[in-house]
Amino acid sequence: MTVKQYNAAPQRENSSTHEDDYEAEPVIGGSSFLVFNAAPSWLTSLTVHCVALLVLAWITVPPPPVDVERPITMTPAEEIIDWDKDYVEPPTPPDLDAPPVTAPVAVAAVNTPFEENTPEPEDWLTGEDGPMDEAVAVDFVDFSNFSARRGDWATIPGDDGDGPFGKRRIGPHTGPGPTPVTEAAIAAALKWLAAHQCQDGSWNFDHRRGGPSQADPGTLTQAPRGATGLALMAFLGTGQTHQHGKYQRTVRGGLLYLVRSMKRTSGGGASFEEPGGRMYSHGICSIALCEAYGMTKDRDLMQPAQAALNHIVYAQDPVGGGWRYTPRQPGDTSVVGWMLMALKSGHLSYLDVDTNSVVGATRFLDAVQSESGAKYGYTGPGGGNATTAIGLLSRMYTGWEQDHASLERGVEYLSKTGPSKNNMYYNYYATQVMFQADGPYGDTWNKWNREMRDYLTSTQSKHGAEAGSWFFGKGGEHGAERGGRLYHTAMAAMILEVYYRIQPIYQKQASEEPFEL
Image (tube, rainbow, N blue to C red):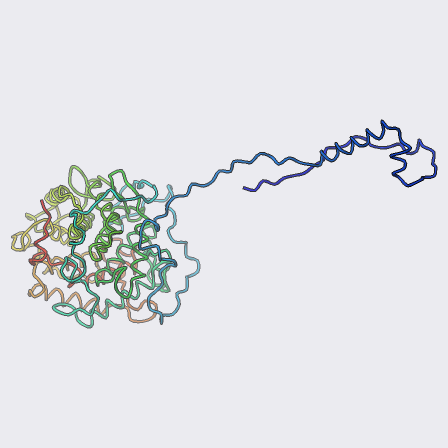
């Protein structure tokens, strides 16, 4: 801090010499004669001392130094993550031939802070309300106390074709399922998503904040982490990572945003919870982080991914075994599905997964099943389409065999129901169930796949700023319009990526890595 100094002389008393009392007389030798010769000695001495005092009065002594409070500097997250050191500018759309992105006018700034008096957001997938407990707001911390499940990092499978994510290579893909039409649709979707990434590396369900499209924006603006996790999952599903592919900078920006936004929790991990997405956001972001680590073996991602898994274990309802909006709240099937998928992704990535959490999730599934496990409800026994698809897929992940009688009846029920025209949440889970249960060559799967992929490729936007995206309007799953065009685009892209995005559970390669219960 700069201290401004002021120099000031003391006020002098009346210093008049009363010249009128003296008679005028000729001056000999100028004024110095009068001072040094005509004046008496005592007056000369007095004059000299007065001058000396005046000189000393004008000399100021600087004040003592002021202790200025200096801000405490903390190591930013970007210095903790090695692969961020060369990241200078925000990510830009990778297509250099694309028209420049112009920010829309009168759109609120990214990441509007959540105020305490803001009404509780409606559950963006199910319509249910629940209390929102704020996560512990602390700075990004060092996760060095967490380690992978297996010590020999060099033996962890990566994206070389041998690991659990080996089918995820940068296209075009061949084999049963993908076609040139589906591959073109996925490529267009990724291009649209990249063009609507925000400058801080995130995505927002109000996609106008990141790109040129103004049509069908979502209203769920307070869940940028959840939106970022979904978008990243779409890129990772085709082998695009921060180390490989056309969209390296796009994926890197998204991963950086997630890692920077993590909040340490009392459960020994770190959380992605946020006002708009709550534990939904945490599960989705955990999947993206674990997959990115498993695909690249980037050790800088290992510790944040492990911390995300630790928070899932901590947040589980210790009584019922499920997960919901806030940590340790009695669960619902929708959130449980994301958590189990995150735990499975972490397990396949050779991270440490507490198998007691898998046992607890099985206990929750038992509590919400109906018809001996062929159907599933939301928070209790039932048989909704989406919750049944989630429940069946969860059963596959937790150990049900392919020929389990209840699983077969549940698959038959989904097959008769068929794909939805506007409920992408149901389609996302049901497509995985059909693919896993029947295999890539089964008749039941082929019937579902033809209907699903033909519908998606025919409904994708082909013109203008919306080219490559989807929006299925209102009337689908409750609250999906809150996610808007970005939500629908990410979900539809992942459905079309099912042939290589997920590992077939009942093939030998996947069965070698079951949850070790």
